Image (tube, rainbow, N blue to C red; front, side, top):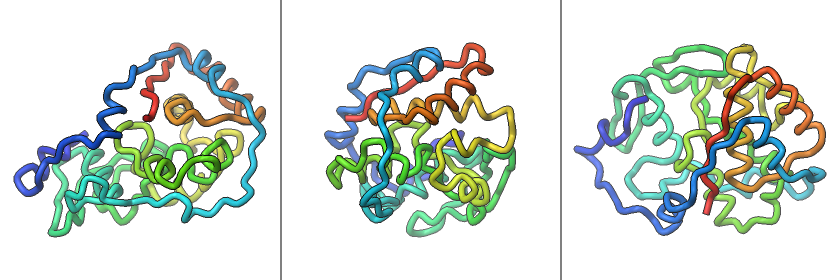
Length: 218
């Protein structure tokens, strides 16, 4: 994974951590077996009442370095040094979409997927958050699992579904997907309904010693 700092340090000012980011870095990281982590998810009935995608302001430039969240993820996940034009426009690189095993060199074919979709987050507790916290969730660059560059077609196939109704088309990445999903929900203290928990438990049964690593969000 190519480091953004290596790509743009000569052109961009490195700013100090915001208080929220500093708080995240100060939180205690947790590592648990996948099955145990699933049991930690609070159970609750989901409700999508009142959901609007606009409730989650996303692709912002939180650190004001000219790179919005989408660009930050593209830069961080490129396997080679990406080509970046004025205004932090990422025009080339090499990205591996782990959902479907596809490698792309043009960012136009990529979507930045919220591991736990915005609508699912709303169903699972984010409906009660402040707009500021929803914005932090939608632009979470402090956890590698929260946002991922994948092919547009897999992201749109996934849409707002949870693992009950959608899993990566390739079998091999499904354990990674399950751990990423659970890590994101635990990081943001989101709930799971009974069907979702059952699907995750079934996945975990075939995942051997897979572990979940997460740091609670501030």
